[in-house]
Image (cartoon, rainbow, N blue to C red; front, top):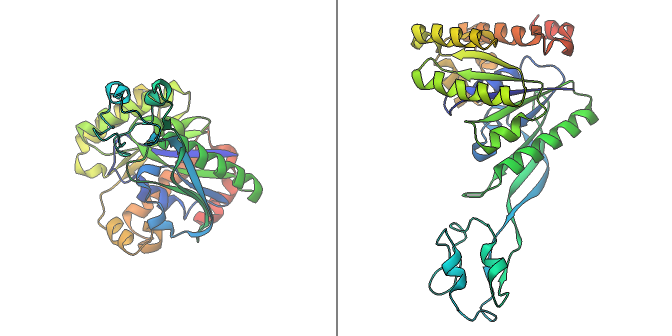
Length: 301
């Protein structure tokens, strides 16, 4: 079982569009959307939900007015100013730290576990998919990412899938860390800008910390070819494989509007050809080539 995680140092680099494109090239694949804070892979894969389950995340403090003596201790201790003068708790301001619960002299504060979202097992035209939806302003996205990945791995084993393709979250925060552990390899999607290079460096450092091999794909490379060269130079200095360059192409947007990937919309386009080459390089890479190049060649032919 192999898991390929697609990451980017920031949002808007085209990570999900590229992941959706890979769906047309990946045989016997399980799809996992680990970008639970802003999930959008479903817009391209159009999953048919077969099973939904609640995600129980952190706890939320609730004051029981019949037991509260309004001593003010909880308001004094709450560093998030989540408790009003009338001793009601703002559920959006409460961070669920539990300090007020532990130190209330009257034990008048409950701390029940809350439903923070849902996770789903679905089927798509490309294969099975596990994804989730986190509630507005809810926490514990890292915990939900771990849950989604665990369920994807279990389902992949049951269905005999030889690859999990995971659309990870952008950045380097808790949810990104949760998407990295145990992955076979990471593909970092980067755009040719100063901030793009900086953000790629941070993701590369994170992947190296967790000893996950990193590879680099430069999207919209032709917007700034001088910066593209700098990114490739940096990748080589870190011994990271450069998978290829993908040109800027408005066909990605046209395909997205139709709920399709670039191969379904414009299979003969330059961008589609570039992504086909990138995918071949992924499968030919030392860390991933045990997946079976024969099946890949059948798909491409």
